[in-house]
Structure formats: C-alpha cells, structure tokens
Image (cartoon, rainbow, N blue to C red; front, top):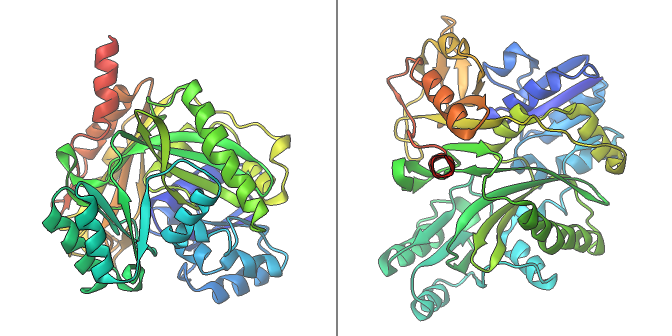
Length: 429
C-alpha cells in the first residue's frame, strides 16, 4: 500500500513511525513532514492546508490511504474532497468535524443528546458576555468558538482575568476570527482525562487513554499551551469509569452523529473532567491529541494500518486492538518564549545521544535541517522526548535521562511531567 500522512508535527511523526512498522505499508509519504519524519518517509513540500494540491498529489501517485493528522484540513473538508475521488481516508468529513470546528456547535449537540458537560452560554455581544460573567462569578471558563491551536481557553480565577479574556478574544482579536464568538462555561473541578475511540461511521472502539499537561511551566503554572507532555495509560481510568464514559458519553455521541446525518469516521478524542459526580465532557477533538498520540503509538501492539483501514471501510467489528503492558511518557521540548513569541532557526545537537538510551524515542515536531545539515528549531513545540517503562515512574525517568542528553540552549521543558501518576505509584508502594 501507498500511504500518505498529512501534517508536520510530533503527532504525525509518531503516526509515521507506527505506520512504517506495518508490513502492509510499501511506500510512506508525508506532506509536508519534518526533519525526523524524513528518516521514515518521503517528505513532499505540500502544506497540510493546501487541500487541492494534496488531492491532486494523492490521485497522481495512486495513494491507497490518506491519514490526516491536524484538525484544520479536516475542518476545511479535505476528507470530502479525497472521498469524491475514491481515495480512502482516516478522518471525519467536514460536517462531522464541526464537533471541533465550533465549540458552540459542540455544546449545543451535547445538550441535545443529554451528554454530561459543563453549563454554558454562547456570546457574540461583548456587554452580554461580561454581564453573564459578573452574574455567575469566578472561577469561570472562557473559550473561543473556533479553532485556536489549543490556546483559546482561559480558566479565569478572578474577575479581571475573566473580563480581560473577553476583551482579548472579541476586541483585541488575539485568536483571529476564532474569537468572534465565545463560549462561557461553569468551572469544573477534578482531574482531566484524555479518552480516545476509533470510529468507522457505525461503531466506536476504545483506543486508549492519556493525561497531558497544558500549562507551560512546572506546577501547572503559566500560560496555556498545545501541551507540554503526556503519559499513557491514565491511572485514573478504572474499568467501571470506562464503562460510564462509553455508555454515557461516547455511544450517545456516535448515535447522535448518525441521527444528525453526519456519521463519524476517524479518531474521536474526548477531553474529560473526572468530577465527584462522575465523568463530564470538556470538549471533543476530531483527531489524535498532540502530545498524547505519541504515547499511544508507543504502546500500541496491533498493526495501525489494519486499524485505519477497518475504520475507513466500516469494518471495525472485524478487528481487535491490542496494547503493550508498558506505560509511556512524552516530555515536550519547546522554544524559549513559547507559547508567545519565540526564536526560530536555533541549532539542536546530540539528538542521537538521547535516542541511544534504551526505551527512548524522539519524535520531531517543529524541526528542519538547515543548509549546513544542522538540525534547527522552526516551531514552538519542537521535540517530543518519549520513553516506555513497566510503570510511569520508570518511563518518566528514562525520558528525562534522554532530555538531559540534548544540547539545545534555546529550548525549555517542564521537569514534572506525569507528577500525578508518579505520586500515585509512590503511595501504592
């Protein structure tokens, strides 16, 4: 099979890594890819959002399966155009992708199908939004309606912070058109959980769990990011809790989408808050999480191509998904200044020393080789230093051992990834 992966981040590198292991993959191509992906696949210089060019390329190269990594091309309708030409895809069509494209649409869907979530209201009027916040009080959550690369959420702990979040989104336009409408939600307390399900338009199959760290700095301090690290599986997920998630959240969603005439194909990523009243949905994403995907791919025992093809063909009921017993940890190395302004084209050295550590794998995100053949950082989140182990503590320790081998003065990372899971393991001893 000829397989094309669309995207250029750490998520896509890990997907390529898993696909390359399959005996069914005879040629792997990535558009546009990065310096790490280039070691596994042929990288072609096509932007992930250049849908027409990707479709033309897929036709001309007789691609058998396209796997779309990021959300933006999915929201733009890349799946619809590929399927029009008979090209198999892993990912939802444009209508199903509205679950992530508009948080307001998603919240209305959840309300319609009685899926547990936070109380909310939608606003396109600034005064009405501020009056609502004043009435409800803090803490409170303000979200942009549209896509904001994981950064359009403010958990406001005081009134000034909440009102500033409204101004930033709706007046200052720091999230562009994504902030033309905002969603204001009740604050939910508890522990977050990332839960994944593979879907084929008819059924959903559990596909692992993870927990990530959104804040930029240790102690969950600092601005929200796209994710500074993750670990899998999530220790908080018990079999009893998983049954509740499937019965009360995932299954009603899949059936609701079918009822709406927008059956879901691809990966459904449920961001959950585990409250004292049980799991409640924070939001849906319509693609693999990044940095969670990297930990899932390291733990996956089954052939990923078999899974993607079964989902594309509507045959998930004919396969099983198997996992390694190991835990996996991902530590993100980002450019200094991220998620605000950061330096680009800084040189990274000694990646190979990190990769020489047993159980460690380095997935590239924002990297490129310069004209001198040096590895350089060209994005905000740049490297994913991953490791596996018999428990989270062992995996975490190996990952940080690898991080310490990398020579990149212009990068930074958190030193406390997986702190909750490590603390749990210490208590269990």
